[in-house]
Length: 388
View 1: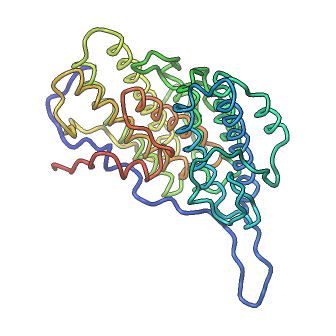
View 2: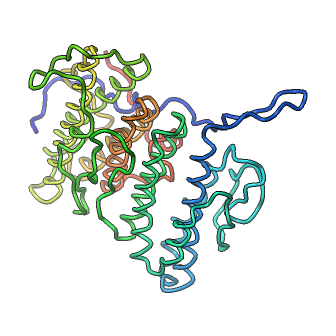
View 3: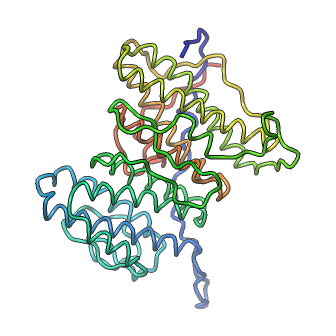
């Protein structure tokens, strides 16, 4: 990881999500009493609420039993689940009960409490039975991981905004699992072609790592084998998709540069090893987006000659802070990419979002209930400004 002399702007902050997540109700009614239009996201939202209710029931079981001594650790995670449920319940029929048992159309004001979730219409009996079988903190961590995986299965069926929410909550579930001691890799549950089935790379805590090249294996761009040039059947990407991919590529160019600085300031210990792993992972993701863009006939954006860091990095503490900043900004980029990619490629971006969220937390970034959504960006450090 060699440092470069010239610097322009570190673009990570500028590539963060710039729009506010809106509710994907997809339904409405017309004057004159016409029948309400069907919400295409209704089945996905119903399953997402049911899965969250199952987790809430599991938390209540553990907190009331062997996990009582860790209630102070478990209650904040449960509170985040209530926020997840509120987001998924937007647009559901008004009769759908909330986690606290209130039959309202929106659970946006839900707060953590000690009550268990009420039954949800369309709840998965298997998920409910699985939640009932959870009695220990270790089993609760495994349940969070399985739920993180299951949410990925609905990515292709969801609208773009709901897909972004699913990917964000899946990443949050994975963070919960790690916090509860489950470091088993989260495997992609969606039927996307050649989707990555590995966890994020190891961070400063030394948790389980995925191969650095896993993102590269997650997408299969239309390129001629061994040439890196577009195949004859290459199909141009829609403008929004191409723009989001270029943003992800630019962010990974900046991340590769940034980790060069991080590695140079860390002592020759486990943290430097972790930084090298992260550096290789970002190189692999960068190459994935290059190939996908080239395979569509687009010209991948080139790296800048150098980047202006968002703050001075003089020691190991500053290096860890920069690594956390890089990863936190990338979660926003990948939240946008999940919504922009075609349905059969969303898992790839969701894998990247989860990986960056885990890395950000391991490097010391403050947590958020919705990694990759604008809410997280609003509380982060200001974005750097271009220098020319």
